[in-house]
Length: 486
Image 1: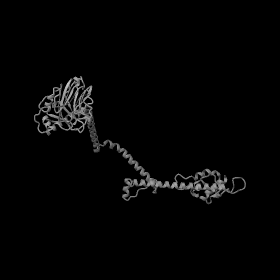
Image 2: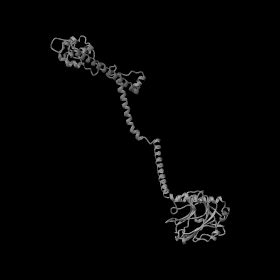
Image 3: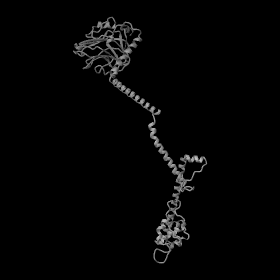
Image 4: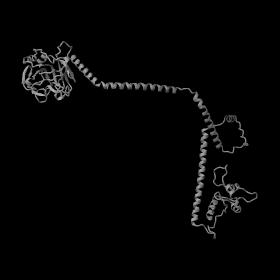
């Protein structure tokens, strides 16, 4: 171990040679170890530049007796003065021997570590100094020209400032950079204090500026607009609720207005209206669908016999369709005149069927009558005033039920509705009349050749008694003229 310590001292001595201090070190007493160690520490007023000073400086730092020999050289890493020579003895008490390979390797490693540590400390001190200089320069640039007014005036007049007390005309002991840094910091502190003192006074004395007034006015305007918008939204919601509640009624009114307008247009197309009897009109259904039809406002009473007559002009490509149907709550097919598809024309009474030998597909006007009585179910059919067929046992002893619905142009599957487009009538229809008995053949012939103006005693053909829906329309009609044209 003693040999290891001696080797370390030898390396330190080789880095910082002590000159003649080695012989004197042997004569120095061991009692001065504490004072020597204290002398090796850097003074408080020294800089950070050197890790190890010269031997003279280290020697002068320790206590020295007058007239005595110079103090020995001490290392800052140990407290025991040793000889500057490298130890030649081993670790044992025997004769001196050289260090072994392991000890030499350890010594070299320790020496290299010490060198690296010294270089790192020196580099760190250099970087600290550069940082201080850089900060000092920045503060000097930020506070450039910081001079007091008296000193600036004296410099302008060429006067030389008096030396500070206690300096005896010499520069101050502290570095100029440190002094300037202190002055800059003090000036900044004074400015901050003044701003903090002036800030409350500025806040209290300041009046509302123009931007502040503008912002207040803008907020007021925005609030007013928001209130107006909210009111408008509430009004629209109320209108929407009212519209959804009255939608069905509005739809009915719209259809009624459309029908009225369509009738007015038809009247205008035919020129100025002149006098015409109430029955001089016809209903036109131009397209085969399930929503165009006409409805009689009046219903039938209970009947035990009837005669139904009308003028027809079919425009269908296939069957005639349904010129009329009468439905009651308990029976949809109470009275129906129907020609569907390739089937012949049929008369249905209480859902009982009789086929009629009539031909109405030539797209010309024809006068058609059907008569029936509940006694033995007798029936007869007429086309253009001539009887074309007759029969019995059609709903014998059945009474026609009252309070039903008469529809022109559609077949009812339920009371007043559920129409089928394939069974719809396409064409024109007029002079629909109903009697509560079977007319004589001569009466029917007079109606067909326009020599009689007999009106139905149950249902009369009157413009005020017929409503049209879905696009069906009304137009003028002269029975005899239209019949002769055909």
